[in-house]
Amino acid sequence: MNEQKNAILAAAQAVIRPNYSGDPVDWAEANILEVPDSPVRGRLSLARTPWLAEALRILCDPETKVAVIQAATQSGKSLLQRVYMAWQIVNAPRPLMTLQANDPEAKDFFLRNVRPLWNNCPPVKALLSDGDNDKSTTADFKNGVTVYCRGIWNENNLQRLSLGTIIVDEAWLAPRGHLAEAAARLQAFGWLGRAIYMGQGGRVNDEFSALYNGSDRREWHMACVACGHLQPWRWEFVRYPEDAKVNGIWDLQKVEAGTTYECCNCRVRMKDSPGVRAEANDPKRGAGFKATGKATTWGTVGLHWNCLINSSFGKEGAKMLKAKEAFDAYGDEEPRRIWKQKRLAQPWAEEGGAMAALVEAGDYGLADTWQAEAWITPNAKITDSSLGIPEHSVPFRTLAIDCQRGFFWAEVRSWARNGSSRLRWFGKVDTWNGLDDLAKAHQVSRALVGADSGDNTQEVYAQTAKRGWKALRGSGQNDFAVSDGQGKTTRRFYSDKQRIIVPGLRERAELIVFANLAAKDFLAGLRNRRLHTYARDVPEEYVKQLTSEVRTTDSRSGKPIWIFPEANRQIGNHAFDCAVMSLILAVRWGVIGREATETPDAIAAQPAVDNGNS
Image (cartoon, rainbow, N blue to C red):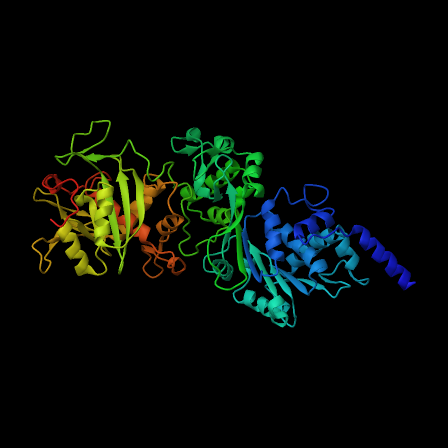
């Protein structure tokens, strides 16, 4: 009787088994007849979600030993996990455990989502043991596979098991040390073991983020529908309609209806439609995961995609603006934290709770001409194109230099008479002569060049003195006594110029000291009002550095302070420091605020652009 039963079963399996090509996507689409909880009925098709198809192939690749997936909610993570489990049960049988946040969630996930999919996948269903309990969170299969579904918070769930694969869902919620404890269950399987960690964005200092940072960090790249240029979906290139903001208030209906996405290469504005996203995400046009880093260990893969991959640009823009409004109006960071973690799938910085101003990128390129740019006339007056630009005038541009040992970080910024500014250039420079060339290339007056003198002070004094540049240094003081040039003094957040003797030089260095807290608060205010912006084509490193410091309250004194969180130290804060120094140079000329102290003679007596050693 058993022989007859086995023969019938074998014949049935032969009927439902496809001609397996080795492609796990082909296998999944042929064998998963329906995903019960999906709004799309019928046989599984990953054609609409090509990022899941490629992710499945990567997970099934024998060379993938550790996979770390950071992805937006409602973009297919759960489906990917379940499809992979079904594939492995049949094609790479070994003990497997999937871990959810806690035991109740594990039970709900297994009974509501996993088992129903198995019931719609004949090869998996046929392998379930005869005594399988469909109400259990453990399943045994006839080919020797056992699948466990448990909660990662319960440390007892991580003991006494030898596993071939572990899958940790929402890994950022795991208690510290539990991810490593779960991975230890793979040791008996040696090189065959595989760990998969997935979730939305976590926190910058958690184990999940550390695992992703140690991977090759593959970003899903789409192909522009106009020029075909491959690029990751980045929030900085979401463009709101020009008429969607009136008197400082966003019309969210216009945002939803008119938001577009700008190609970083050809600047074409892509319309907000499922068809456009499908075309951009089409692998036939080159779309796919591209590594943006180098893994610290062989076989460690990182995958990331955000909400723009499958969601309306306008609807996401409205959500983000609502979250930002909650912070601006009530100081409530929670909506922004949730939006950044869930929709951008990026980690949140806990210290100070600051997040990059995601609409801070201006609608301009680094090389674009700016009609509103201010100019300095030969008699040291500030003008612009609306008032006429006299001959021999120079553009009002600042060059701020953050001095390191052996090289420099530098920023060139253009300023308008109303206090708004645009970034023109940011990057590394190797030598002082290279800084001369940079100033000359951007027509920066030597009166508007400043270098940080907090480190290697004497060298900075000597080099700036030779060039007629300013030496700058931040201070913990709140303000300084400054002369108004008419015998009176007032309190300002930066000092008068202090002339410093430099051994061996006739010229003296000019030092300006400024209050760190006031200057950084001033910069934050300009950024919040979108007067201080950066170009849409800036390096990603610039944005990270500009937002690396956060404002918080000193727990001991109760006073406000700006801090540089440990989690951001690998990124650096050079762009932030340069922005503060540029601000000091501009404030002294009165294009921002009412604290001008520079006198016309300071520039009238010197060449507009002089980068030599005079």
